[in-house]
Image (tube, one colour):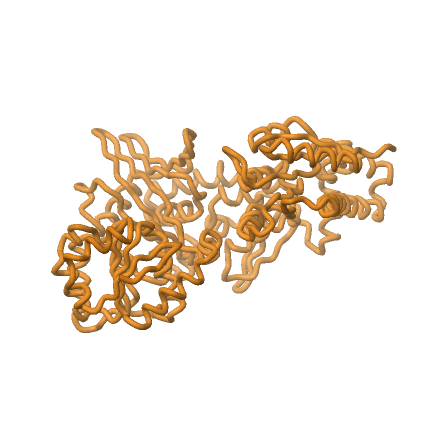
Length: 572
């Protein structure tokens, strides 16, 4: 039987690069498909059989990282290996490529032998994995060599897995295939049925998340939790499943994907509506997360509030959620671009409950801006920060919800490769003066540097915690106390810490007005705080010098003034 020529999709906006790759690969027995940008590449993947993708990083509209993420996020294409073209010394591109799911990298200028070696290695690895599964079935006497060759040909042409191809030609049913795989992987094969559902366990998780991962919680013990999983070979999915219960050891069992989805649909369509009826009839429902605290019943509002927290903590980056209430209903709606869909329906009381919690921050009836909001899931310990806005109309209300990104040291280092040197310079001045007056236009960069400074300086203690007073909370720092620079909050802070000094305060001020209440700022700098960083959003070093000519008192109060950016640190 003739073998199928491997097809390689080459993506680059430079015609000369495409010509070079095409000439090199065709000469060595490969078929080449060309695309000039990410959008064209995705269309080619829909239309053509592709065995491997080689993509440049820097392209208009959709770069190589986003293309790789789209490929790895699509169930049909995610097994196609991706090679990213990077600059010879661009380490940050390789880190971004790894995060996007790329299997390998080649550098410009090209080394022909290196390109061919990496292509051959990835294509061989993909073929070996598929062939190994097929050989297992041959050893068990379930298929013949001829049937395996036919399945491999179909899998390659249609970009599907060999087990799917074997099922499509009727050689094996999926029960036999998954049973054989479970033996190979030393896993238990579970024949699922609705009677196996542990209702109290399954409602600890978002149904949407379980459907996305194609997994199902089976049972748990004091130290372990057991999941049925459809694709144990996908390491990213396995990692996400293990993160659902990080405090316990996760044991995995193999099950048919159709059976997992059927049971999740059963739970969504049959059990969840029954639970709602029970709750709406004012009967008490025992939420499983409560077992971790007390074995008491909780009210319907607590149940739905817990459900809302779980969904919000799982919301994808970049999406906006709306809690929408009209005279007839209350819904949580997700919005991405122009598309929106209902995530969950809630009783009206959950909307009123959210409003009541927001009143702890500010009088909700007069609220017109954003409110920072912190949430934690009791059952898992997951936590996150959000910002909420209220939009009110005559007969309906909406609360807009966006997630505040959490600080990540890894992402910070990738975004600013020279950050270690900048933080070291800042730390040197901080250890000398303990009071810094920093100017700079990139406030998010300055905040992250100051937080990194605390982590390096062992200033992060339990109580009293370091405090960040910010005009706008743009990033969530897990080890400090963050509050907005409302006069009421600052006055309350001063009142509560009259005796016990605060180890560190970062204060984001304004200029020229400095702050709505400069007297409070003076009180903070006069002794309530051991270490103090006062930040002004100055656009330039010259602008900062000119503005501070009228503020000599800051120098007299012991502040060391400096202009700080990713490229310079200049003392004043």
